[in-house]
Image (cartoon, rainbow, N blue to C red; front, side, top):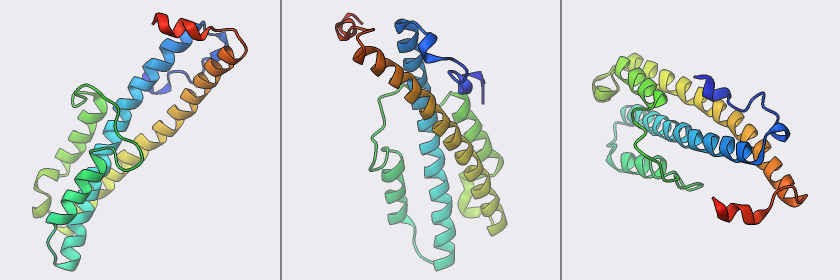
Amino acid sequence: MSDETNQGDTIDPTALSLDELRSLRGEMQQRDDVVSYARRVAQARLDLVRTEMNRRDSGGVVSDEVADVLSQHLTGGPGRPPRPAEDLSDDALSVELDAICSEHHYGRVEDLDEFELGELADAIEAFEQRVSQDRRARFDRLDALSAELVRRYRDGEANVDSLLDD
């Protein structure tokens, strides 16, 4: 992942001006939209691969399960609808996931043998876990920035009315 992954790691939120604090928090939230998108797509693709594995094990039909997988992941799932975002398919994370899927022949998942299918699942899962770990660390940084903003408003160092000027 790039340097922006670590953005805010070493920055002391108390040392930032209010504008810098808001700006950094906004940038990190935008980046989280990208990371969240890539994570949801990876989870959906992984679930589709696992659904194919299950179909093979049970000899069943996959059509109903595919609809459930797609509706669960690509709409944000039950817990959090996705925030509005631009087309993220050209982002480095999306390109990386597409490369992983291409390398492991995701586009012809039904033609893969069990070994190839397992390798595909492992590769997508490793990507998803790495993105999820990054996202958890990002939340910690976002929480620190948000806590500092709240503290400033609570202690009167920042004026809530200034939000209307933005």
